[in-house]
Image (tube, rainbow, N blue to C red; front, top):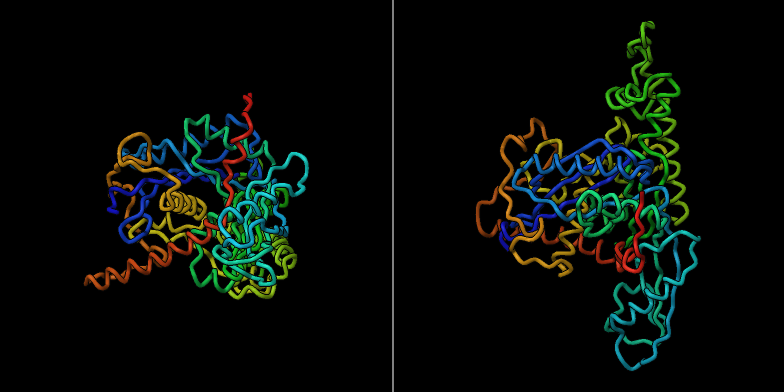
Length: 472
């Protein structure tokens, strides 16, 4: 399919500190070209949960407007939305089913019946099962079957990873998107979207923990033996660090955030003990001198607590010593200096920063090669997974943003980077090299396909049988 026939997918990441909208389209090599980027400060959201509908709507509208301003040819009507929040939980279950017709092969309907049985799993009142993800199957006495379709057997069973969330919290996010004159194409769990953007085949095989340190929550997705093993949402992240600085040093919230970003480090021993930050005095009071070392101690204490939660979750599933791919840190919090060293110290595992350039075409500005955009890039990849698997109809004519032919972004909008992060660039000198490059990216896209194919249910099921009530 030529570049101009590919649909434009828009990812919308509604976070506690920022709302980001990114529009992208795949090129002939299977890489995502960014056609528009809009970012706005988030208001009305706390720890991933919408607390003020009107403020959240304004933040979404600002991000979408700025995305369109970055490329005036864009028309945005449908979006893929990331969802997280401290209300998201997960649990492991086991299900078995005796087949009625044992003479026939195991088919998709047997798997669907097995998955459907899991909706009877007990969950707390007010929660909703969001997704049921089969991990590995058992056919009679044969264990660890990846795909049982086509096999013969009397009894089929599976281990399941069930993701739940508060029904009203999820509906409020969708309500904000609806009232921003947008259509929610699908809601995607943020740690899974981030994982798709930063992982490669080797990571999936070796086993990794994706740790997305956002503004309000830290999201985890753990992969082992090529499958999703665990998800978790830790209710501590960047906002908590900022509040700790504000309360511990007696400064304004804006000053605390600026100090964290500009001078913060996750390892106190790496901070300069002789360096001081001068904070202007309030309303005639004398300026305040703050030690960079003290600032680092405050940041390290909270980051260490977050990483101890990560270790706790890994120990719960007995994978704290078996993830040979280590920990991949992403999200805005991954930009803290010396964060990888602290992670390795606390967890005892290797760590690296996950940038969303695994699936991005080269030539974008350095700003896009930032871990804070991992979720948005992952949402675009989810949109392409739906499109390539026939879940999204594409006519090639007008109707919504999926069908609009968009001109390339203006040179001044996406300026060439001064010193960009490493992006894979290959000189294509022959047809053989071009085909080899395409095949490499097809393999990379298969990794994303396997990740999203495991998600049998869709978030939108929550809204199919429940009639929305107006929220004031």
